[in-house]
Every structure is written in structure tokens, then in C-alpha cells.
Length: 280
Image (cartoon, rainbow, N blue to C red; front, side, top):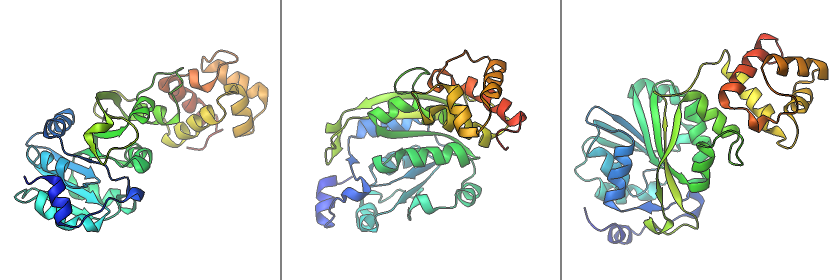
């Protein structure tokens, strides 16, 4: 492939801060990300934010099919050159946030997500797949390092929060590699990490996904307050009832929400749903 900087210059491309454009060019790193995602000749890969097409091309070399979304239409001539010969790769110039995911999944079948996500959309995009995806086998995404730590945090740590619990309900999450800021063009102000969220491993069932979301929101709404206080304030229930429910759920008196594992939060959400405190 031609030198990326020369292609960008020849196409008159200028980076746009509002879309978080930081491109990867290192071939070894790109191949490693593809390997982290478990992509092989039977894989349909979905990419969010094709950028200049470096990861798209690396995916196309291993995958059965690649569908890449890109919001910036000024990258069209760049991608025409960087993806020349990649017959199994398709670029969709559309804001993925506005895409109908159910319709897309019906067209893709089973798939994996592999992407160097723009930092400003990282959490909303990941949570969309966590909450809505039916046929996604998992995500392997480059994110800001501190966000990666939050995604994979253990209960009781400072990094543990609502997004951690949301991801844990669907699958196993791990950081596969750290990526220094010097690997990007232009160079961002923070380091990054690659996170793999595997929907085929880990995870656990709850009676109501909505009840779980509401319970998690309640648990982390005021981190300094006890879970008992949060239950009283959020769900407008008497304190004695909150004490009774927490006791039945095996939660110690005075515990804060951040000390409960995702599984424990799931058990609590099932109890709240069964009592009719949270609507299913």
C-alpha cells in the first residue's frame, strides 16, 4: 500500500478534531488487533470509524467480509486508494449512531466488531452493542487507556462503575494490549489500550435487563452513599423495606453499591423486579 501520509496529502485531507480522528499505521499492531478479535476466513467483521482504512485493510486480509462505517465523506478518495483490491470490504458513509442495528444484524448474520473507536463515542457505542446487539459475538476495540481500565475493573476499585457492570452482564472483558500515543497520527494526548469484550464467554442471566440497568444506576448514582440510602431515594421505598431486601440479597449493612460484584447486582435486580419495585 502507498504511504498513508502521502495519500492524505494527495487527497487534500485535513484532520477534524470534532470526529476524534487519530489514525493507526503500524502494520504489526493492526495485524495484532485483528488477531485479538479472533478474525478468520469465516468471520464477518463490523468496523466503526474506518478512518484512512488501515485497520479495514488488515481485517479484509483475514475476514470473510468487512463492513466499515465512516462518518467523514471527505475520506472517500483516501479509502478508494487504501482499500484498492479489497473486494470483501465495503465502506458505508453514514453515522453509525443513527443506524438501525436490528436491520443491520439481519443483513450481517453473526459478526464481530473490530474498531479504533473515536474517543468521544467510545462508551455510547460499546453500550449500544451491550444493550441491543443480538448477533454480535463480541467487540475488540481500541479505546482510551483509562476507559479500558473502567471497562474491565474489579468490584470495589476506583475504576469500577456502571459501565463495568453493564459489560459484565453480557460477557468477559479483558485488556489485550497497551498502545502508546506515539503510535497514532496525529498524536493524541493520552495512551490507549485494546479491549476485547467476548459475548460468547462469561456473562450471566437476569430476569429483566431493564431491572438490572435500573439497579446498576441506583447503585452508582451516589457513590458516597450506602446502597440502602440509594434504594430509598431512587425507588421511593420505606427504609425498613430497603433493609429487608438487602438482607434477603445477602448484602451487608452499610455496604456501598460499588462493593457489589455484577453478579450480586444481578441478584439484587431480580429481587427488586420480583417485588415489583422495578418494572420489568
